[in-house]
Image 1 (cartoon, helix red, strand yellow):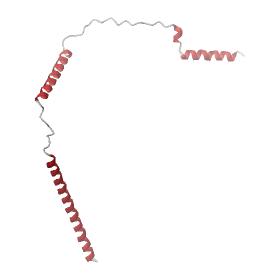
Image 2 (image 1 turned 90 degrees about the horizontal axis):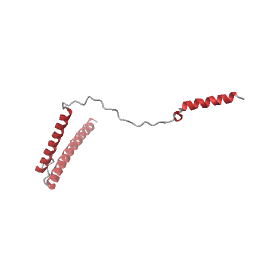
Image 3 (image 1 turned 90 degrees about the vertical axis):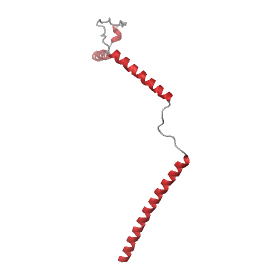
Image 4 (image 1 turned 180 degrees about the vertical axis):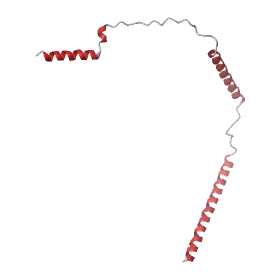
Length: 124
């Protein structure tokens, strides 16, 4: 019985060794395939490229414009001029005269109608 157990252990160890060998070979094959595909596709363009001289000039012009706007904004914001101390006259608005009857509130109407109903119930 122990011989059978020993044979099983050796077979299991052999199986594990073969699995590891197969994984190693597959990894090497994948790497070789990727290298061959890269070689066949030709030289690749670099991901980061140098800016053309014309785009550099536009970039510098944009930065200069932003700097001018920032300087102008700071000058206006922190200028020594104080705002005028005179109070301006309030703007005139047109007032619309509405008759008082139009301002009857709903609560007032409800209260009046309730009072009328009470008086009508008391009369008979």
